[in-house]
Image 1: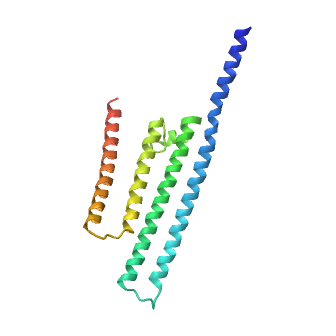
Image 2: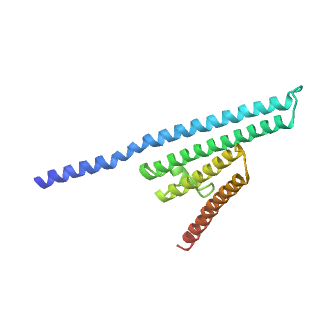
Image 3: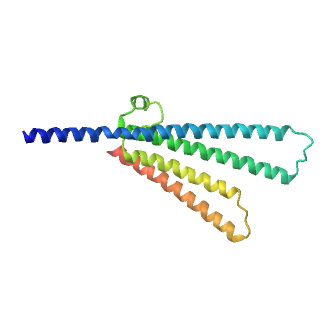
Length: 192
């Protein structure tokens, strides 16, 4: 009798533990909502930028000196890089949501069915897959942020330019090693 009661308690507790994985749906839904918000905000920013560029190009009577043009150009490039940054972050949230869902809730059958004809970036089979995909997009966000900050930097002396060169070298090395790591992983799966 005691054995049956203990077994029933154990099974009930295990069922509760297993079903508690659905709490992950909160993170999935929140990440998807955040992703959509960032996609919309970045798109609205780009549309506003198009309007500003149109006004700049069509306004007559405005003196277009080199200084005015350089300021306008810097603002446009900075704005575009900011939009790219927002789109990349939205992509991270999107991949994160899909990955969490696949890892904790259920495989997305539609993604599996279309994986032979479309990108496999959204097909997540393990935590390492999710980490790898997110890591690459986060690296791209860091690269974009680096260049966004460099655009607005003024160089006071030769040491500042050296720091810029070192920063670019580190970004290049990070991209190189990420690419090499992807190649090695691909070769390992070909033989296995």
